[in-house]
Image 1 (cartoon, rainbow, N blue to C red):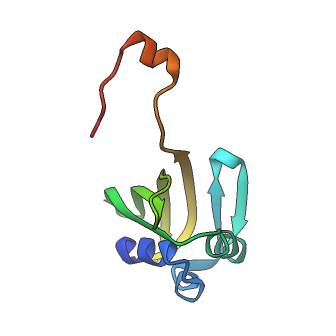
Image 2: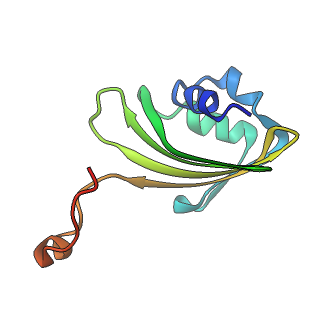
Length: 122
């Protein structure tokens, strides 16, 4: 599976292209919101999400039957951003299940700022 093209199609909200990446009985889990989707439900959730999106894969690890990505996602106006870690289990080069963990990017909490611990990554 071409994971870079998969992410292009996810960010472009291309429903027609997305279907081809999945086994028909695949499941997608969004753990941060406790949601499980069938393939049609995932495509609806992704493609009907408001706005126009962009992003880039920041890290990618390829194993024999799994791809793990850390991807930064943001609206084209860059008014906010998110990071998603995706564990993509493959069978016959198609997604059989995908576990995703989405997080809002933002400032550290005030208590850590007050302690003056940590430094900026970038």
